[in-house]
Length: 233
Image (cartoon, rainbow, N blue to C red):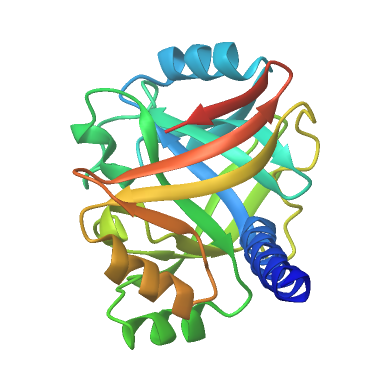
C-alpha cells in the first residue's frame, strides 16, 4: 500500500513539474503585454500606483494616433501602456487594439517573440487562428533612437486578444533593456466564453496558458511588484 501511495505521489509531482515547465516556457516567450486606455495619462498614473514603479516614456506611433509608456517585467519582457496621442491628428484608420471604443483601461492582448513571422502566421491558419498580415513598424524614442520591428497585424483582436500577435525586433535593442527592474511577470492566464477551442489553438502554437470559461474575454497577468503580487487585467 505504501509503495502504491509513493508511486501515485510521484505521478502527481511529475505532472505539476511538467505544468510548471510549460508555464515557464510560455513566460519566456512573452515579449510584452498591451494595456490600452482611452486616456494615456490617467492609465499611466493608475498602473504606476498599483505596481509601485515609474514608467518610462516610450514614444509616438506616427500615423497611428497613439503613444505609449513602458514598465519592465523582465529582461526581455515589458508592459506597454498605450493610448491616444493628443499631439497627432485623428488617424485615417481606427487606432489599434480597439482604443477608440474603450470606456476604461484594460489588458487587451499580448505579444510573443518570433523570428519567423510568416511561418507562424501560416501555421496558425491551419488551426483556425487568423493572425492577419506581417507588417513593419517603428517609433522614435524621446532620445532620438529609432526602434524598428516586424509583427503580425490583424484588423481585429484575434479571439478578443486572448490569442497574441507575434513580433520580431530584428537588430533593434529590445525595449525592455534599460527599464526599471522592480516588477516581473510571474503568471498569465485568460477567460473566454469559447475557452476550450482557443486553448487548443494556442497549445498547437506551443503557448500553453490556462483559459477558463468566462462570460466575457479577459486577459489576467500576475506581476511581482515591490508591493507583492498584483493582478492586472
